[in-house]
Length: 336
Image (cartoon, rainbow, N blue to C red; front, side):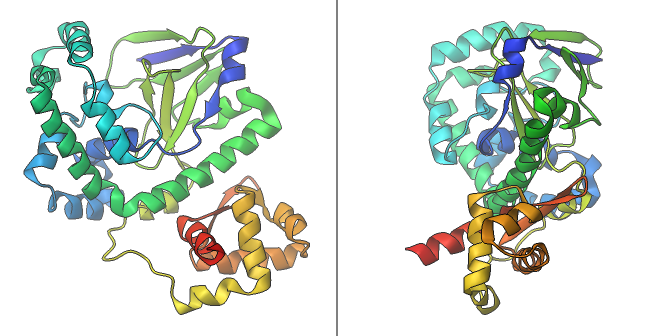
């Protein structure tokens, strides 16, 4: 049916877009996508490549993240940080907290809707095995593609910031994902096609955290996230080519080759530095930042994009440029 999120004026003031991807939330989305056969064209290569590399430890963690249905919320909490640190936070979850959560959640679901080994999570040794599995799962599903995930996140976030800048929070909520999220002030409605129930979440002044995700095809609601509820939504939903190519398996990491090194001439280096300093800038703004003509700024941005140093997406009739992880790495390397 539908999940309704109710906003007050305070909630609108405190609603924001996440600053960076949330590794465990992305991992949960990746684990579900791995088991979802409805995205064959987009993820079939990634799925085959990943399944062939899963260790028994990784498969243990995968058991707790089924394709559909309930999964322990603390496993995929929407928190920023290094994957290793976040997994250690899961490992340190007090057994009493897990026991309380399971006592509250399990009676609400039929046994078939809950991962079979869920009751064993109260065993700290078993929880440690699951955490080892999360680390192994991350290394296979996300680590080889993390720079692409970050690039897509930054590009999507730049669009959302521009929507907020020009139209306020309500404009952002109206445009962030109109295919699945409908803003009917003061309520954000998100359909729940696999659930016949209706839900209402009153934010109570906490606001909402919006998180772009490359892997998702529909939003996920983290209603019990702290310090504020969160909604993960499909990043670049209106950029189908980006979504199709983000998870192409790679034989080896990209390296800075001679053509890329040739980009470090004064003008292009200045353009790259300007994009890094002002992610999400338009071509017109880029020209202003660098003192170039708009046509020249556009030409240099095209060269940088073809070299993989920046990403460019279209928002209405404007091209927005953001640095890629390769571009940031190149800048950081040359400044050492």
